[in-house]
Image 1 (cartoon, rainbow, N blue to C red):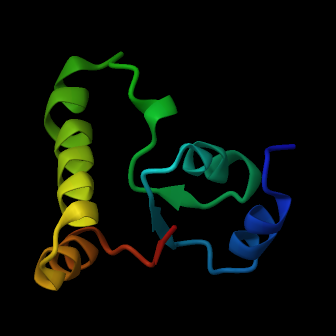
Image 2: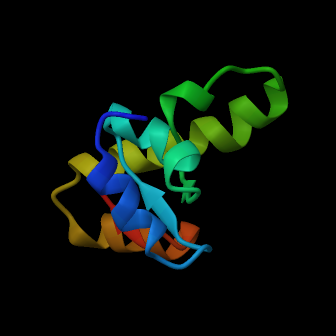
Length: 89
């Protein structure tokens, strides 16, 4: 099992349709061990489909990084609204 079983158990107890956003590496394990969706994860950045990677995946990643480091709460709120993010870790 992954590195943080308590985290996976927590998210398994949440509704199926949640979206989790994070820049930490552990987010890559959440779809496998908690069966919940993530906004982006570095393990999923393999550009098998160039159009998807360059447009959607890359854009989501840039927006998440910008919101993470923004000092403006509005940036975070807009990201949450745009992608329906339920949890950040």
